[in-house]
Length: 200
Image: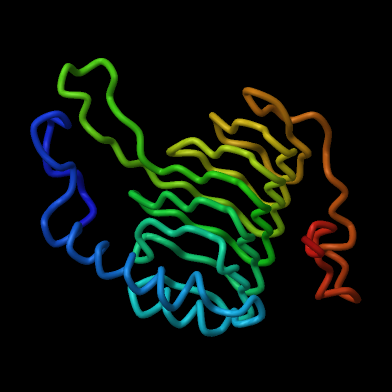
């Protein structure tokens, strides 16, 4: 249902009729029941996403102001946060690990186009965001990127390539700047240590 169905984006839709029909239903449900839900109702929003095929972990908090293009392409781990204003453009698979925070205004985009082809066909590439990651406000995550465990992506960064685990990264393009201390996360006496960003 999620593979692009045409090589020419100018002459026809990129996705099947089934895909487009289910997205219409999802958009209606999202407008009435998801976006209008009270801020604390994370379990309710998770249940709506699961109804449309998303895999949402225990204690995950997805705020009403987040926009999810296709829930069936979304997987979110336990106790992760997707804040208001986040665009989850899940034309392809998007995976967020455990205890990660996606801050306000971030755009996670798993679809692009082949600009070398006259038909400008849509291409989808999966995005993987690991455990204990903080993607700060208004970052852009490019299709096909893997952000490994423990990474911090600074605000308004543009992530074009994979980022190595346990680094603080920033810029356009986003690059590693320094390592991130992981002692608290591996401490058996502190199994519930949260990323600093958990207060977002």
